Image (tube, rainbow, N blue to C red):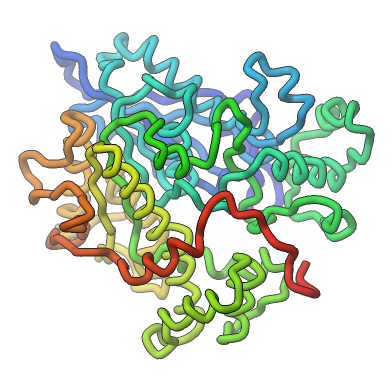
Length: 466
């Protein structure tokens, strides 16, 4: 894996990390097989192509596809944004080394996958969380044109401003990062200073930034998820949603969707990203402060949002925060993207994963962020699926691999999945049994859409807020 911060406080991985894995069916086909290109998540600060076996691609390959999983650099190594680095790059790009790693791996697939029995003209990219953001980045990046022919975005977004950065903001944060990591030097010497640092020093994200915080841009999700794709004029010309809405994107069929309880694994980090200003147990006042100060939503709109999520419907205010995070970051952002696909007459299928696995202990996390991946990759030697779990896994694998083969998730062995359009608003409910849903959180998204425009220039934080 690439260098990254480990939860126990020591770093893992190596700088020599740009490797990829290729999974092919055991029997050689006389025809070239479709290719699925996996992009892992991890908030752009951790993750790898194998992830201790979680992303073992053999079960998907057994469905008649070639699966490629590639490493890309994370954290400061993948996203440091400096004018000096742009000057070193032949294209003038900066801040997107992680995306360029993915792009280079896609170029490798195009040039070499025939040797493994794969069709370079039938490549589907798919990714979850940060991998989902990456998928939308490639959908809207001019440098990725022609490298793939289908896309699956799982729990991603094309416009959430906490994950896509204006170049000026990314440069400002990179200066904050270099200064807090011991390179408080002239601009001309920043890169030289950083290159002298050990990797262990550079992945220490949990440093005190308050000394410099007022002078520089600090990402809203620092230090949990401080990095993301940068609108540098090369890899990204504009926020991905704007590119989608303009119709000037890489027009390939797509599947997009989310899981029911996206927010449950993210809400516990609220005190960390808020500088301890927001504490548990959450109350109406603290959720208000989260929206007003952290998401920079004006007071009348905050009240409008809170009216949509009465606490009596969610047990407590942590439950309210769960669904606020789900809808703001994922569900409504995904709906905006699929609307742009429909406007451009590009086929799009929409889903929500709500299956509660029988193998999994009943926890308050519910159908949590990334919970679908264990069924998609189907590595049940270690988790012992029940028959119902196996059926959910089979349905997911069939939909995803059907799509890779035909640019349509429908086929033998699965229930019909209706293509999304703004009249029927049908999405597939990924559960057992499979079902159709209608207008997923439509009323909530109608409120969120005008609140969440991009680019959104952050206002000063609330008084006393870090």
